[in-house]
Length: 143
Image 1 (spheres, rainbow, N blue to C red):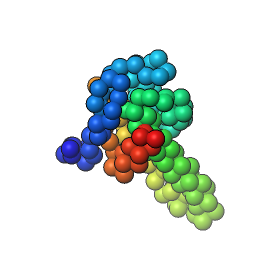
Image 2: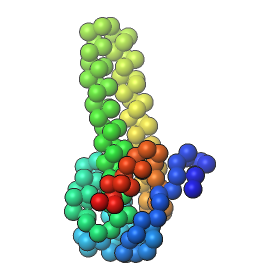
Image 3: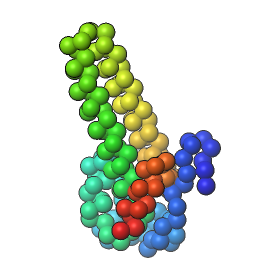
């Protein structure tokens, strides 16, 4: 199902201990599924990696952990690479450095806005599949 406001799709139903695609029930970690998903996004890719490793049963939690790792890991890498490129631009010209830093700031701002949106959706109990990352995350979660 497509979400016209965000241009993304809702996460596909995944078999869980709490029902089809629901953020309910207990996880293998003993933490509530909804809280586990929220924690997957809270620490960007680092907390997602932790939940992907320790959560073995609840596929919705694994899906969101994988999705967070892909999206926010990718954004972290992009911010790092753009920051390194901006330092290189310092040797070209001050104007090029400032333009490159502005790009880094805009990417960072976009990542923070995305993070806040995902955190809000998760807090409300909504399951959200991001384009590309959600498809890959669904494959990872089903392992």
